[in-house]
Length: 130
Image (tube, rainbow, N blue to C red; front, side):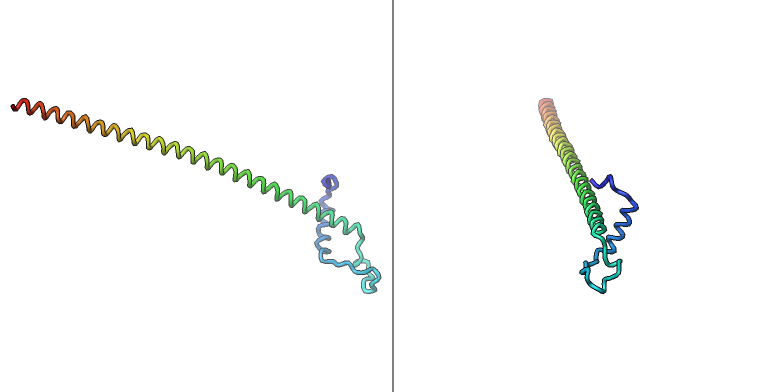
């Protein structure tokens, strides 16, 4: 809304003036001690300061919102990546367990075959000796 009226020089000037007058308190106009012109600011001056402050606050809010959205997206990406890594690790662990179980079964089968051959040889030797 205010972007089409943005003037960097005027904006900087207003920012500087607004920061100087932020602690300024309005004095009654009929006060004789405040007769100099520097103590009386025009209403348009304060309106421009408040508009500038509103615009800067809106841009700050917008930047914070964008930053929060970006951080949320990053956290979501990180969560998805962690889930993917967890799934891959679970699959790898499952494959390792299956392979270990299969190797164990093969080893047991080899042991049974070796024992069977040993007993067969024992029987053959016993028959030869008799």
